[in-house]
Each structure stands twice: as structure tokens, then as C-alpha cells.
Length: 62
Image 1: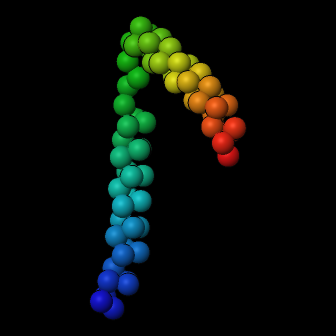
Image 2: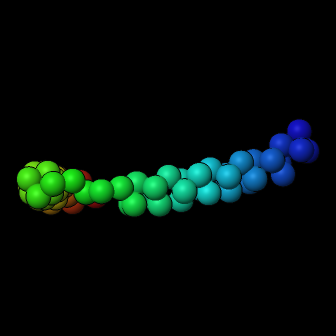
């Protein structure tokens, strides 16, 4: 049980390092053609519009 107290933060740190490594890898990938970038932009704008509308409703209850 004592070793678990020290092992958990180490595993957490390893997980964060893995996430940083995978994030770096994803960011290095090609974004695609102009058409793909345009579609991605439309998706992003739609998602942000949805979140804005959702947060307006949720703000009433918070």
C-alpha cells in the first residue's frame, strides 16, 4: 500500500508525458487539402455555435 502512494503520481506523470507526445505528433500532421480545411472550419464554427447556445441555457441553472 505504501508503494502505491508513490507509484500513482509517477503513473500520472507518465500519462501526461504520453499525452504531450501524442499531441505533438498530431500537431505535426498535414492538415489536408484546402477543401478538407474548409470543411474542418465549418465543423469548428458549428461546434462553437452549439456550445455558445448550450452555455446560455446552462447559465440559467448555475
